[in-house]
Length: 192
Image 1 (cartoon, rainbow, N blue to C red):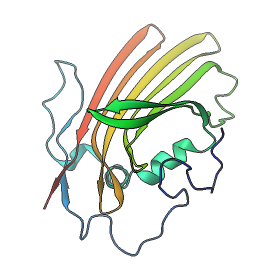
Image 2 (cartoon, rainbow, N blue to C red; image 1 turned 90 degrees about the vertical axis):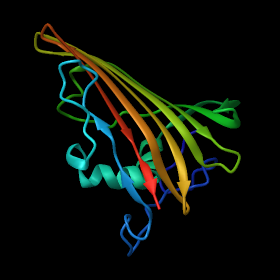
Image 3 (cartoon, rainbow, N blue to C red; image 1 turned 90 degrees about the horizontal axis):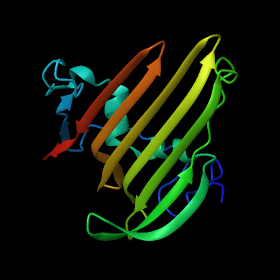
């Protein structure tokens, strides 16, 4: 099954087309706070508890996650759909293979690319969580590189808006003899 651009998502219950709105995503909705930590590295600075490490675009994506999620689902191939439990509640788990967007500068360098997404839908068809894994290997001239990114998120529904409650992104990259690892955790706490 391929999810077509512009068509409604058949299982998620959220519109594919971007919505226009004259209201700010921040008002009159609850105020968010973001406790952030930059890295899991012991030499990293202490965790941030303010918006210093978060751009306005990141904040909007956290408070209205549906358009970004739908953009990722564009052109995806459904691999499997099955009943599952998520946080002790019944859910439909979709396994999807996401398509890679073409980049003329990198296409010749990428030798292996894999992008998978697990999406859990609640009984009303709204996403409750997702886990995404992107693996890439390649070489450019004599330099070999590899990377893996794992992103997990849990969602809540606030006033018919899909909001990221918690997100964890772990990245590992290798190239030119170096290996880097980074973890970023974001928690959105909605205040009245």
